View (cartoon, rainbow, N blue to C red):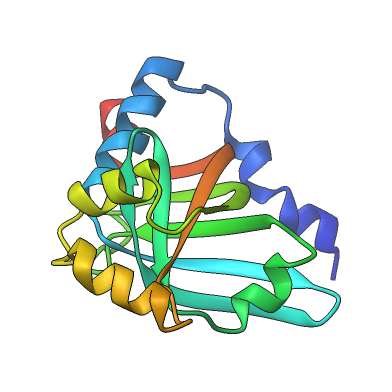
Length: 160
């Protein structure tokens, strides 16, 4: 098995890249259209791929979390991959974005935190979040800053 050839399969096939504006529009559309993703983390302790809800706001992916194994990896490795895709897609109807980036922790209850709460579809309120924080079990907010994307979108291919 030649793993390098297999890894380069798509990069060899891509001859024309769509204009940057179109790609960004597709990324924004996909990330705005869905609420579920898988976030992959890794470290010398292993790997984790967690299905989570997310909020796409101001060009960032935000993920609320009570905790979990992902934090073991994030302590030493802030690099993540977030995968968003239409679950009902077949080979002619695929809309997906893999977001490669880094994670930072948003300070609990700060202005940015509350702005994300206000712009989310989740019915969180400040009193509930304050109570959780005071109890020592805050609802953490992870912020994914993208540095690279992989886009698979059937509509782009159909448009040529």
